Image 1 (spheres, helix red, strand yellow):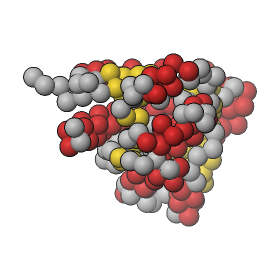
Image 2 (cartoon, rainbow, N blue to C red):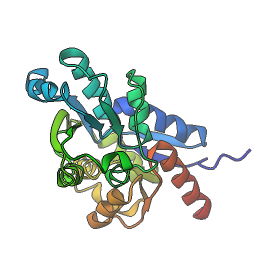
Image 3 (cartoon, rainbow, N blue to C red):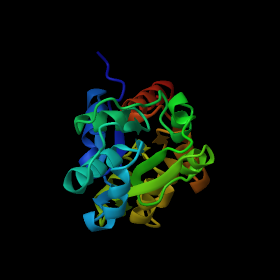
Length: 255
């Protein structure tokens, strides 16, 4: 059987601890995964979370916006707080729901889509007037979810339990591989990852990045890549499966 990514090398830029599933999926399709983390994630100190954890203990709704939020948020909750028995738990996308389930959280509500817009369309989040909502996320992020829920009458606070940082990585081996024609596609899962990658590559690498097909699992990330100047940007379905499907379809149609 011909493997659809045979002979192709795909750059994987996920945080090192979160790259294994995508790397495995690329290899299962016959491709080679070149791992170069352009983003790292670190926990916010528990001392800084004392007030958000107290609010969570009294909340009606908790919304986890990413698998990182599930991992770091539940670690903080186990260490210094509690998730009330009666709280409704929502996840932005099935990947976050699976991460919560792996942390022992049951009854997670999630939309079919992969973004805040899909979550806000759920009927459970339309009648939220007077409810206390805690959004578990990284430091910073989009305001849409909080602003919309507040406009619907909810009392919204944040529990920012992790921060994204640029790794201290040596890009020389990646540049050498790329300059020799050894990188056929790039995957990025956030605009921040893309900008970190460009910074780590430096002046010698940015033209290579701009000329290589880039795959992003959301149209907003794809649009950021187009604004950056990437010549060929492919928005795929969400998650690792969506990225691999996008890669397979692209190389099938562009041999």
